[in-house]
Every structure is written in structure tokens, then in C-alpha cells.
Amino acid sequence: MGTRETDERTGGAGRRALLGAAVLGAGGAVLGLPGTAGAAGTRPGGEGLKGLPVPTVIAHRGASGYRPEHTLGAYQLALDMGADIVEAGDLVPTRDGHLVCRHEPEIGGTTDVADRPEFAGRKRTKSLDGVVTTGWFTEDFTLAELKTLRATERIPANRPRNTLYDGRWEIPTFEEVLRWQDQQTRRRGERVWIYPELKHPTYFRKLGLGLEERVARILRRHGKDGRNSPVILQSFEPTSVQRLAKLVGNPLVVLLSGAGSRPWDFVETGDDRTVADLVTPEGLREIASYAQGIGPTLDLVIPRDPAGRLKEPTTLVRDAHRAGLILHPYTLRNENPFLPADFREGTAADAYGDVFGAYRAYFATGIDGIFTDHPDTGLLARGDFVNR
Image 1 (tube, rainbow, N blue to C red):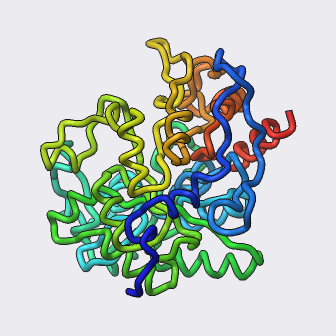
Image 2 (image 1 turned 90 degrees about the horizontal axis):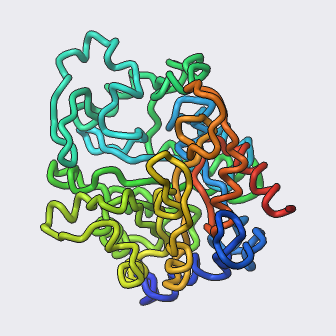
């Protein structure tokens, strides 16, 4: 691997500026947040993330509201709908060391493996980041074996129409995604962005299947490990992101779940800090020393009361921007059960609520982008927000 400038090696201010420049100012009248919401638009400059629209619409696992997630079909539909970035890849390894795209290493709920008698004996019970989980795991299969499986809809109760596509697509590898990205870039005449996540890196490192080095090696092979490469890498484990910062120049994002939770790498190393500690100004400054953004759960941006209704926004957007970080919170979905109670309409599990109202509330906080299962809806909501 060739040498890089100091800021690229250390994750310092030069790399942070790539994502931190020209972020939206926090504010807005929604839910009593003081100030005026900044108008969304395109960041100045044509390189890196500076050229992407703001708020950025990120297709969560592809257009997973319409196709089984993490399939080339879901990725392609997201791009055809106009998504700015496609989250192509929750990366997990196979037994023989290949990286494939699945929501979790347990694939009983996202493939037809349970219906394959030849793999009945592979069913296992394991502890996955402290959670006892029973099913079939990618690390117990070779790539050739996984390629015989077909993807299925993960949440059919909420998306019964997606089951129409069960069995149509196989499990893609990370390298196949990178080749698809190149093909789509040539076809469209503009750069196609992807946003892979490294799943359970501590778990896999203990199995001898470390993710960071594999990801870096593949990106280097495809010439996509640089500062302006259209590949953003993310993980829920801060130490994994720190490891990546030493291996690649790509933009890096730390994912953050509930305020009271602890990243699993912290649990393993005895670090007592929780996500609540990481989202303090001090914690955000530390993240900014090696990453360029955070991916918080939406509840860290606007909490919900016990009835599920939105409360006042937190100061997270302001504090993260002051630290030079961008925010890409997750995940906004159209269906009622996933929306704040304020925006639900009816009780049907697969019915859509007032998702446009929810987008307005979140965009008004000044977030830089959002993960959504329905990129077409997100794009319409952004248009409403920009032109209001």
C-alpha cells in the first residue's frame, strides 16, 4: 500500500473537512427547535461527498421497501429511483474468507436455507455479541455453498408484496458489488456511491476472519481505498473504524445505537462508556479524531416519549457539526410500525403513514442525510423541503 498524506493516515482535520465542510446549520421551527432550518442543496466542490445533495438520500440495504434487501435487485432499483448513495453491503465473511452482503451473519431469515435439506445439519446456536442466536451462519458456509441459496424478504408481515421476489436473487459478494458499481458508473456517466457496513467485527476477528484487512485489501485491488473514493465505510464498533483509518483513506462513519447501549468492542475490552458518552461534545471530538461522520439512530436526534411521539430535538446535530462531523441517521421507513406515533395512520402493519411529515421533522434538525428503505419517498420529501 502506498503512502498517504498525514491527515489521511491519522484521520485528522484534512479528512474530516471532506465531510464536515458546508454542513447544514442546525435549527428549524419544527417541534420548537429554535432558529431557521438551513435550505438543503449541494455542497460546493465536485470531489468526494462535498458534491452530493444535502440532505443526502441513502438507500438502506438498497430499495429494501420494495425488494428483498441486500440483493442486486434492491441495489439496482435504489439507483434507478435516484438514490444518492446505496448501502450496498452489510459485510460478513464466509468460511473460506470471502465477504458477502447480508444483514446479519445469521441467514435463516433472509434466505431459503431453512428449506434446503442438504444444509439442515448446519443449524447452530451461537452467542452473537452477547445475544444467543439460533440459525444458519455465513461463517459455516463456503462461498460456493452460499451461492446456491436465494434471498427472501426479511419482514414479510410489513412487506408482503416483496415476497413476490423471493428466490429471484442470490447473495452478492462485495467484489460483485464493486464491479456492479463500476458498471453503473460507466452506464450513467457519473459516480455511483456505496456505503458498506462491517458487521460484528470483534466477533469475526475472534474467529480468525478479521473484516477490516479484507475490506481494505479488496478496495485496494479495485482502486477504491482513497480519500475521494465513492465508498463510505461504517461500523457500530469504534475500534473497528479506528483500525480502518490506518488501512484506507475512505470516509469513515461510526454508527450509534440507543443511548444506553455499549458498542460490543467496548464490552469486550471493558470500556464502560455507553453511546450516551460518545454523543457528548467530548465524545464527538474523540470520534472526529479518526472518523468523518456518525450514523446515529433517529431517536438520538429526536427522542420519543413513552407513547412513541416525538419530543424536542437533542443538541446532537449542533454538537456533531461543531466537532466537524456529518450525521446520517437511520432508518426512516414508510410503514406505520416504524414511524413515530405522530405520523402513523391506521394500524395495519403494512400500511403507510404520514412519512412526509416525519421527513420534515428530521430534515429541519439540520441532519446531513438519512437512511431510508424507500428512496423514492425520501427524494420527494427532500424536494418538498428544499422548495418549501
